[in-house]
Image (cartoon, rainbow, N blue to C red; front, side, top):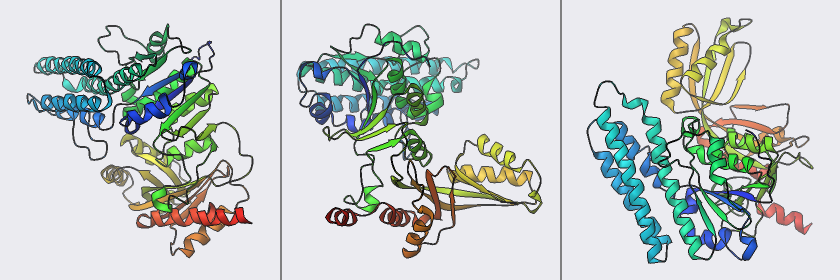
Length: 482
């Protein structure tokens, strides 16, 4: 990635799908708020599809219920996917009807949706017909179809947002990176550079699609995490002063549902090292690839609550902590895959074989431990994938004892934990809560301590560790009074 030589005072800001569904509130908070004139500009917004639209286009993110993509991939000659595409069109039109107050704007948005949906439908029909011949295989085109469908959602939300903002007097500009009807192939860098050619940050507010069509194929590498990669590339290539991610909540010291809304603390300041640890625990402040691009370019990242525009949120940069502090406690359910082989001592290759099997079945490692004759990997993966790894390893090491247990990793994270006694204090807190840990580990870098606990005690462990190491609202009140 080559950073542009054009330096600017602008920011590049990303808004997720759940927030986008509250567009009127966004208009009155981060898009416009109390800004006037020049203060409205020097801000680029990268937007996701409205909440639920991508689920209808691809598949439901949590339940796996197939959308257009899922139905088309298993369709043969069935037209169920076409009915699903009709539902997408209806959902899009219903969504922007709630957002756009002007009749002419709603008509323009309706026409935009009809054109995009009709174009996508024609592509799918033609591809289905083509692949009815034996010379063409549908599975070779499915990733392209997935990208085509996904781009519909972001193009819709960006277009509608521009209409809403223009109606409010903002000089908003639709920047479509989805490659719609583009007959040329582009790298991601070229796609972004071409799209921003002629954009004046000082007088225009670009509203950009979170999906970008490119030769690299973002979905092939990042699937539905592509919008943050697009966002970070735009920030780097345009020389942004700061990258901002707007969420529906603050980046806080724990899940308020577990420890109480009054007890959590906004982190306020942390670094990319902590962001990496959060990502490893499935609690992404930003996709690791996106964070890497920003970090290497020296661009700080800010995570804010979109609906509290006066709050500066949490700044993430490369700075070390001024003093040791526990910043966050979070948990993740895992499977502990344990390989015990008495003859392992002094023999090389066991670890490599396990890693090969995990890679082959696309299983993510959260953490691992080993001793003379046992290797344990803590895995974030479906049970069926873990079972496949088990079978592979049993076939290779028929004398080994291989087992999988349902456990949880509860991680205490901070830029520096030196001298805080996290291990001893954490064990005491768990004992007081009646929780017996299965394992405990930390690295010499002193940025996280992981407590391995039974899966059904994860939430209780998060609360116990948060209360002991970060404190409750009562603790803070007592310190202030003192």
